Length: 279
Image 1: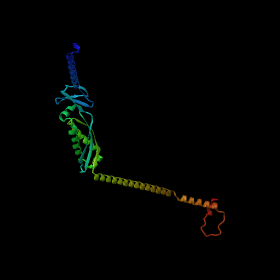
Image 2 (image 1 turned 120 degrees about the vertical axis):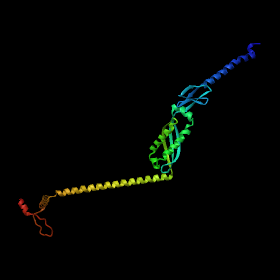
Image 3 (image 1 turned 60 degrees about the vertical axis):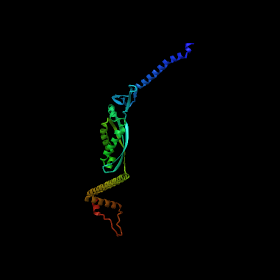
Image 4 (image 1 turned 30 degrees about the vertical axis):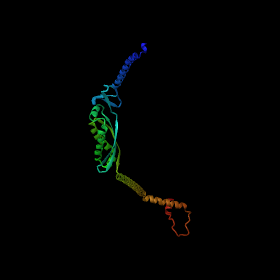
């Protein structure tokens, strides 16, 4: 019988190939499990049998012990947390506040955060801290000041929140008070007050305009009186006599040398003596 066609011989020749294939597959699996990638915007931490290692891994490829170690990733990018808080103002007005907080994880202290708090720090630490601090700050201001001093209120909330979250190695990047919501009755009172202020401002402006116009009229009257006074000072006896002579000369120029035959009215008086003397 030809050995090449012997089934027993063929069976013995296949075994090494199967063994090699199995070893190769195992090696590939181990090889793939010996590396892990930390994505950008994250830092990594080794976890060996449930225990964290304080070695902080930068983004990139890192080696690990297959099937024994894993690498957990901690997001260090800026994250936004939004929440609605219901509280009362200093003057006991109910107010609902919508707050948006931008925060991030301190890269150097990621191990402390994950080891002490865990991956749910947003709901365990951040959310409750925002709620408590917003309520505390809101209670210090009357309702109208919450509207007029929104930036001041936001600054105070940020200051307290920064101090609170720093204990857990969290960084507050920014905070925005998106909206204050008050009761309908309070909104109506604010609207009525604004209307009253606008009407008062209009009345004040009208009064100022009337006062200015009155002052202008007084100034004009004073100027006219002063002008008339100056004109009166310019009239002297010599000026009056000169005007009389001018009138008589004009009348003489128009006279034809005849006296009126009928007198019944006023006849212009002509001083003939003065005319003769003038000749």
